[in-house]
Image (cartoon, rainbow, N blue to C red; front, side, top):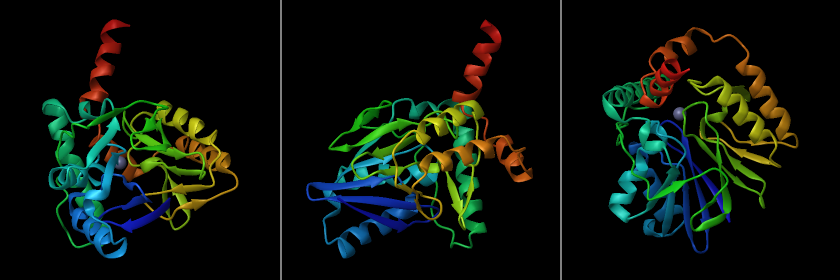
Length: 261
Ligand SMILES: [Zn+2]
């Protein structure tokens, strides 16, 4: 198995190359479709149809946008956590989706990237609904780890044999400084997710935002992330949070808790 990292529109996407097929981690932006196709044909010299699976780590448009387009064009199946389509459901989910697409374009603009298509499909309808601890379809050397905090349905992928971890947005690495994802919606769940990730025997952490991390002390990295959670949020973090609380997966459980406890 060989890992390839491609710099996409907003984040990087990873391709795990096997003799029996290709695995996409994760769903990329709509603007990344051409990039993935080109890399596949011209660098890997393989047919795009050899992708057997796209894993969508969470619904944000830079992680879920390319996968449905690739499924439509090439029949590439999508796997994601089982509750993923609740995130942008209903009228308030519709609003959150538009806000997230808009915020993704702000990130592209701040990174001085030429503005391209980021508006993604609001509902993914995965072919495989994943649960915590299960192995990936077609690629059973990868197991699924539910890591809520940034959203309710984030997942990481762990390859025990290769000591590799793809942890989605759980860590942002900018110039070798670690940052929390923007936003952290569920602080306690995020803390538990870091504790869980810190127990894994990991040598390399694959990051869609920033440089990958090679480490002999994975536990300390996630301890450091836990410490960041305790710092007061800065102005940008507070602003982004205000625009990120409209998913029904956020307000519905709060209302239920208020009414029934
Ligand atoms: Zn995200």
